Length: 455
Image (cartoon, rainbow, N blue to C red; front, side, top):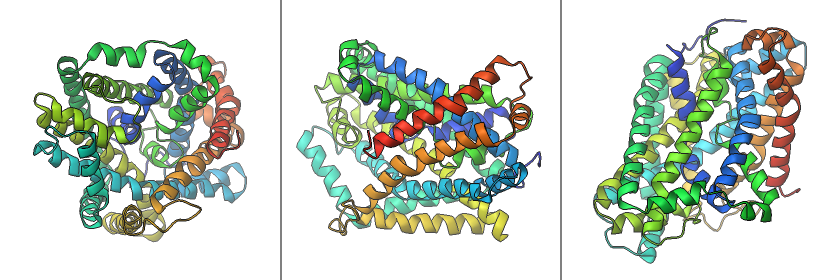
């Protein structure tokens, strides 16, 4: 197998860590983890989540990076080449197609939601949230989602930004973007945490996130464990080809295991910092912390509208979300661009434009499902909700399961030892192999069954 990718290579281990962390850290990571932790016992849930990251998320991430680095191509061609090398069915390339399809569908509605965050940067900065109540905040959000022209404008701007980065290639595009955006994201998070510690009820926020409430956990133990397993899997951007393609640009000398552990740690750190930035503000203003998706676009604007310097820090917060969405989005577009360059002979720019326009067109259908096409449903769901359901509940869990099966059961054990730099008696390798063959796929199967209502 090749030791380099035709698309380029990360210049350093840090570049890969920034890129993979940027792929993992997204909008859902910033709002879902904190309120889920509070819902299922605070610190007790956090402990279960960390155990799930270590036992499910990190082993599958190691497997996905390993497959990518071994194949050095787009996920489709990587799985085809590895299947041929192992003498197994070429149908394993469908795993690559599944990942690319997931990325396309996710990015089509993710771009629409990212457009909301871009619009809210200007709404917050211009003082539109000053003195508003819950009804006023809901009216602002409702007016935005009911306006297809405005949604189209923000969706288009965001996709142009994504295509501009991906079209420039690995070194000049992806790496340069993440080297700028990831430090900026962490800096904005720290600033928001400092602001929350001064202007919000920091003690209440810390207690909500970290005080173990085992009675709450015992009352919903099954739900809490399934939720923690799902969060551990989804928060690391697994099963959609993004981590596999980023792994294909990683040096053969870099430690996959150590890098995966660092990425998982940074991803969790972002989630915790986001909670420390959000919930002190929520509690200081007597708002509902378990508002779910509405927390960002309907609850927090009320808080920023009532706080000192709320316009400035509200704009900073939504800019933070834009950065998080941008780093995730470029990783979702990259696998298809790599495939078009490899299999169709397209230039990088042409492949990026074609993939970007396709996603943009799908995004138009998603944004119209919020207003003009709201009466049109498939299986009882609008287009945006349908894409969300198909990816989160079906395609991504199946992708994670098959990645674990291929790495643990199909790929020759000596290949995995070579890629992971493990000697015959390496204890950590034996732990990883046990987790990837048995524990991780069984847990993701449970997540899949729970998502589709079978348990």
